[in-house]
Image (cartoon, rainbow, N blue to C red; front, side):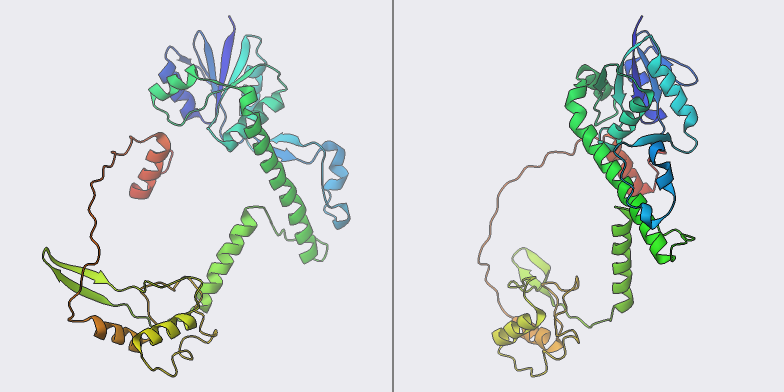
Length: 342
């Protein structure tokens, strides 16, 4: 009797699916019942490799760059050969009529599955199980609404393109910079990548800001307001504050509004021409004690008028129950638990 082979991204998902569908017996490498076989990957099983036809170009030499293969070859990732062989054998089993992709719903899950079937060299029909929740009900509903392979081709193409682009940038940029910085010897590898290099730049930029940071005195104005309903605290803010207004322009505006004479106000702002153009600028913040005192003097002990009061009933739906992803995120934020432990 022919069966459908279900491939998941991780063993825990295979176990959840087996429990939701029921009737499975667990073997060493897969679950099995009368209708399905379920086996699993362990994340990414493959990595891109330099094609055999370009092995000569694999030598680290500036003259051999860029490396631009017309086709990409797959190589099992480190220590993943055993799992690759298990899945390849199951895919080629004559009793397997079709394959269901049950890897994680997203680009990376799609790529993990596509590389598995590509390496196995199969042309058996493929369907997609798309799960946003791992409850038994959601799993059974997902199997009732399997997506077609054609529907998933755009996502698969996007996943391949992203991975191949990362590989091309990484292999060429890493070799070019390593050879350039080491005088052509390549003794110390300088690793570059599409994600890691911009991320490193963000860290370096942040560290530079920390090293160059100079403490500045700022002032905020807080007040206590008395009303018929009781007292409440409030904070003054500049209602005309704009991010594209320089701090010099803002200071001139406030001095004019307060009719305050402060000849050295602009010079006292900052050595960088008074811009203070960073994340520390905000509507409630003032950089001159005299301006803060003047505003406080105009407000303190005065009667105010409520110009507008609006009341309207609103309703708010209760939050939905957790799915696996949101539960893992919440457990990590609140309790420091890993996704696996959750």
